[in-house]
Amino acid sequence: MKRVFIFAVMSVINSACLKETKNKVRYPVGHDIPNTPERIVIRSSDSSAESQRRTGPAPLLLGPDALHEVYKDVFSDSLSEAKTSFFENSEKDDLGGYRILNPSNPRGGFEAADPVMKRNAKLSSDYVFALRKFSASACKVLIEKEMQTPDKPSNLIVEGGNPSIGKIDRFMTMLLGHKSKTGIHSGVQNYKDAFEKMISSAPPPKSDIERTDRISVSYNHLCVALATDVRVYVR
Image 1 (tube, rainbow, N blue to C red):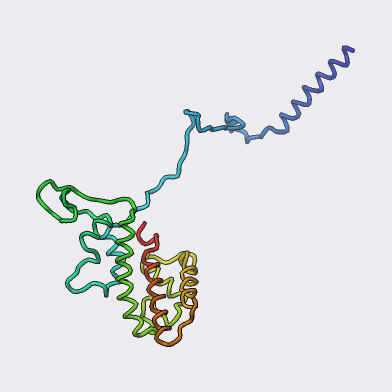
Image 2: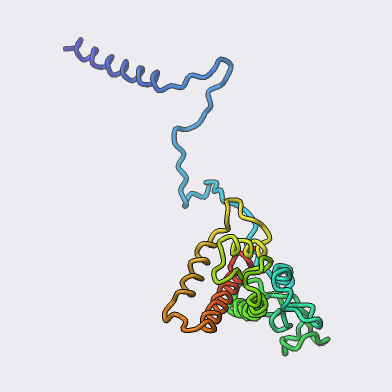
């Protein structure tokens, strides 16, 4: 009985040794075995745990001066000879521009008494409204001009009665200032589909004038949508 017990104990020890030898990693001669635990468990409640976060610059909401640079090559016809900016002072305030303001009359512009600096860094309904108000006006001027010669190759966005994917993508490239690395900008196909849906919506136009009006309105919607794409004003 004693011999059986000793044999059983030796079998367990031999089995453990074989398992350790089998799982042991062999390192080249001269290299120390790293002293690392088999598992590392990091819990959110563990104050000693080191957490790693992805770091990078926060998204930047463009102010009126930056937006002017973005839009100037596309909507230059919207500027009269007397204007040097696309936006009025009140619109610049809504778009987060820096101006010296009087707290009692923030729309009044510069006053010497108790001036403060105004800067809106967060996206607001006023910002979106001001941006859409500008783009609606600027797109109207652009589309009216290009619809006079809808098949002109140099048109920025109008291309006959139905713009191609390439035309929409080039317009987006002008607004973003860079080309897509993978072919066309993301979302261009969706803009194309939306344009075609507007063109073919019921009821169909009954005359050439109605058809031209529908095309013009569809181009206006497309232009505004592209000009207010979130990638245009958030960088």
